[in-house]
Length: 534
Image 1 (cartoon, rainbow, N blue to C red):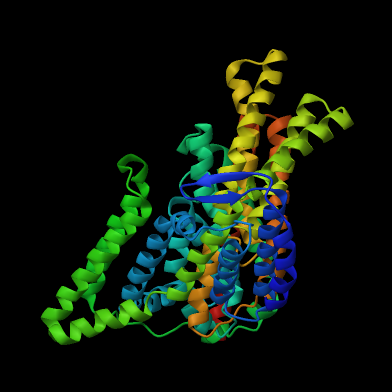
Image 2: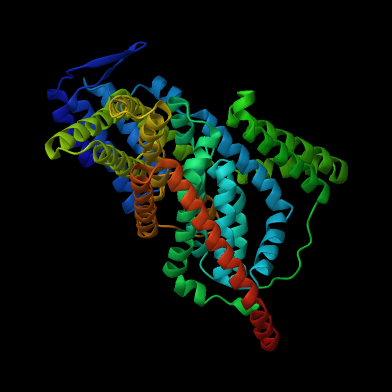
């Protein structure tokens, strides 16, 4: 870092900003030099995370500090501390911290040990079946709740299950976090980029389910097969015969009952936040506060005031991953520099230029041109979202996509299409952005909030996940899901939006029926083999 700063400072002193934007008293540099510096520092942060020369929170803090020093000591103004603080999405921070607090209470009641026993029994001690159950449950829950909330609840269960089976926790946790990001793509509320796309495009909750549920289910099924192949050695070496744990007795049933009631109310708030207009961070904070208050009252009556205060202080200090929250705060600050200097907007504008240039040079027909634009948005969004936070990118990209949608709508109307068909066809660009921004998060450890949260939680239990190791599984999963999305978008344009989804839903229903029949036929044989083994 020192060497990079020493090389950079002379260049900074000789470079003057060509453009500027004023934010209160601070004038951001928005020229090419400022954008290049911010880009280099983002690359430096990425390199520090890959090399693991220090903790990820320290790496992000060092980059923020470097940006502040550059702004203070040189003419290149790339970060204002006050603006950076305002850029932190405290809604996300409160959501994460509050759900961590609720999870810490549930851990103390041993409910996750109980769930682990249930899941292992449902899988009949078979690691591959357990992995599929975890993937399916994660994807389903992530579609209707925030994917970060999902992994916060399921990570402890996965950790217990892996310990019961005596296999690497990542053989279950990595497919789980991938499923969380994939499942969250299916609905309007499942992932923040979808909320941004929905507001910008006017697409409804049911639009997302109708047009994205089919490809997402296909991706989840494909993830099950890929995870079974990728972790085949771990799953085959698990001690399946010893996997059925003893029955777990729940601890503090009154605390558990109260906390589960607060969890139910919290999730109800998540589902209805579009009606109540309450931020999810506020809903989660209220739920966590009430959960902790109720537990304190129950323990105060059972154990006394001093012991209840000690339990609260211990869970508040150790139950919340403060380093993970710090990493998110610093990451938001770094991304704010990319926003204010115009780096993200420049990247989105470049995409618009590429679409126009390639279409003109190749002389593409209207449908081919629309498909090419959709695939470029899909791939570009996936690549960018794997490297930087997808929320600010999506905010910048919707402006470009809105222009493209308007242009294609005009061209489609000139071909004689009616208004509803024009809208359905031009919406393919919105689906491309939503799919790319959400699915790309699986590519790297920092690509999605669920990734960072899961790794942080499991590292606390002593399970380290190197940045490179995450890439080894994350990149193939991202490539597979983006390929499925590309095939879906192609069918969407050439077969038709409604017909594609109806055919896809029918095919999935047929496969589900065949799977059920296969399970029923093989169940007696499986029971006989298990009985003979005993």
